[in-house]
Amino acid sequence: MEKIVLFGAGKLYCDSIELIEFMEKCLDIQCVGVMDNREELWGQVIGNRKIIQPQIIKDCDYYVISTVNYYEEVKKQLHELYDIELVKIVEGHTGLQVFVGS
Image 1 (cartoon, rainbow, N blue to C red):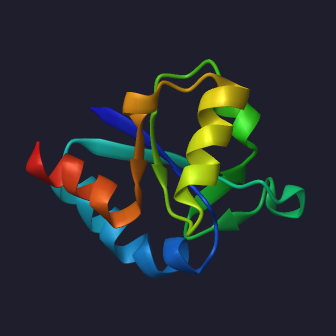
Image 2 (image 1 turned 90 degrees about the horizontal axis):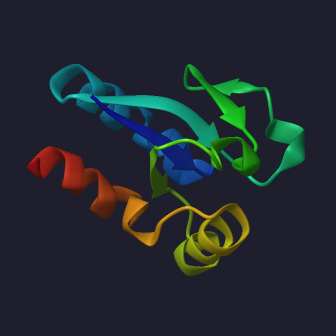
């Protein structure tokens, strides 16, 4: 089973909740959390998923899907600050197609 963590708890994430739930039922993936830079969201549950701080995933082997409009900035943050491999960082809905196609 592929484990994914989404980045960004904003509008795009909220608009994608049903798609993510559908993918979990139909594909061999599990969304284990949603990361966000906004500290005030950490620990809250949105769409049945706990919002976590980006540092938590540093030592995990998750695929990271950026669901925010600032893909390049988030990609740089995850790679440079948290040592996430670039091949594990995919962009929003385009990234979800990676799992659909697998």
